Amino acid sequence: MSFQLLDPEKGIYLSEAGSTNTILKGKEFPPGSWILADFQSSGRGRKGKTWSILGDEPFIFSGKFSSDSNLSSPGLFSLYVGVAVAKAILSVYPSASKKDLRIKWPNDIYLNGKKVCGILIETEKEGEVWDWILGIGANLYGTEIPDYLSDAGFITGDQNEKGRRARFLETLLPLLNDAVLAISDGEKRIEFINEKLLWKGETIAWTESGEQKTATLLGVNEEGKLLARTSVGNMVEFIDSPEDFRSLG
Image (tube, rainbow, N blue to C red; front, top):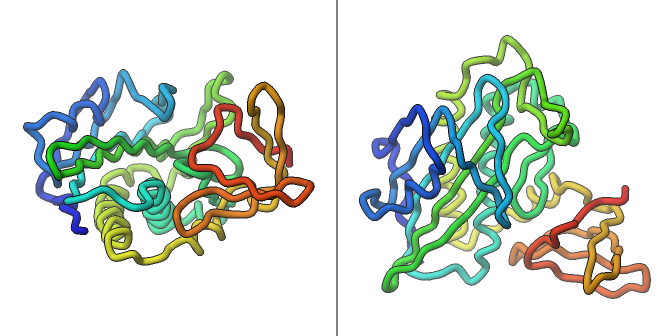
């Protein structure tokens, strides 16, 4: 299969947007287009959740890829994008390399236990062409977190690392294209994901049919599915994360 990648020359800068993903779904924006907004009033996360704008330098981005067929393992798209974002963070913000950077399956980036980036992938199909709308919301720089968002954080609070949004974008675009090419070519990047996987080796819990279940988190397989083992040795395979998916430490 082949992908049409993001074009550095097809960027659109907006001072304000409702949802950059929603805007980019418009047919007037061809594959390769991307949007960077200063503010987003209707940011969306997975499963209908909202994404709040935090800090002095939020990164509100959407990009449109297209492919000539669907992926055999579509769950890899979000994970490989997560790898690209993680590498961009470590490249642009030296202070991040001193923190504990983790990828939360299937779509978030954490630093020192705080969520600093969310990723939302949406697909649309017309004929034999698949559009992949990629949304990335990241809190690049800030110092104050609202009490009601105690699990959120910033990539940096270092004054010396302010004003790097443009550099972050410039670094991220080729890494995103590289990630999508890796998916297309069948290149394996699961090792990096498992090295950085949040809660790996810990006891996780979730609710199933009204009953709490627990298991030890093992890692991500080559298809992008999450694997865990129960206390009696049964394997559990997740295609998507349950609503109350959490770590018990």
